[in-house]
Amino acid sequence: MKEDCIFCKIINNEIPREVIYEDDSFIVFPSNQPVADIHWLIVPKKHTETFLDLGGETLEMTKIAQNLIKEKGLTDAYRLCFNGGKYQEVMHVHLHLVQTIQTKLAEAMKAHDENTVSTLRLLLSAFNYEQIAKQHELTEEEELAVIRKEVKQRRDSIEAYDKAGRGDLSEKEKIELDILSTYLPPEMSDEDLSKLVDEAVLAVKPAGMQDMGKVIGFVKGKAPNADGGKIAQLVKAKLG
Image (cartoon, rainbow, N blue to C red; front, side, top):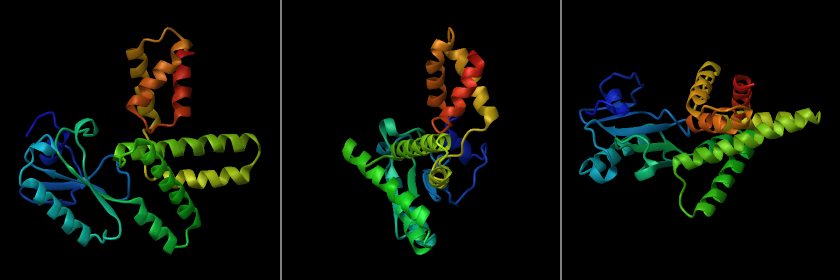
């Protein structure tokens, strides 16, 4: 165990977390940055920093994943992924088990949910374009970046349509925004966001409104899923 490792703290019950599966050597719990309804982390209890440090645990982790896929009926569409190097945010190796968006698309098609079908098809198309541009399969962080970009586009469109008095078009964008937002981690509360702005002001030490962009950049680096417009309002109020 490592004292400053968040996963070790979860394993030791120092941080409460829903447990999907547990045995003497492994634990499975939901990701705190889910990209799907089902996004679980399969984690060895022995502190092991990277995939390259694993031995026989690799096979055991994939066997646990196999059993969970069968038990939860995820056989239509799922993804297993180890992140490494700059893509590994917590230095305690973990295997991601993710229900893919294709599964949600299939469910929406069966339910004749036209709004969800069209929104997810557009999102999958955006993933495809980004994958072609980067020339590799997207990591979960890169997928989240694409979703955030799509969310921002909807918010910008809503603002533009509302100003133009086109409530019909604005409503469609709001529906798509709600669907896309379910694939992002929960937004920071207004209180926490305000505290983060205070932290940013102390760190950046802005000379005035001319440094507003620097403060906003600091906040978005800490809270990439936060509403940019809300951040700007809070920063402007602090610097005004």
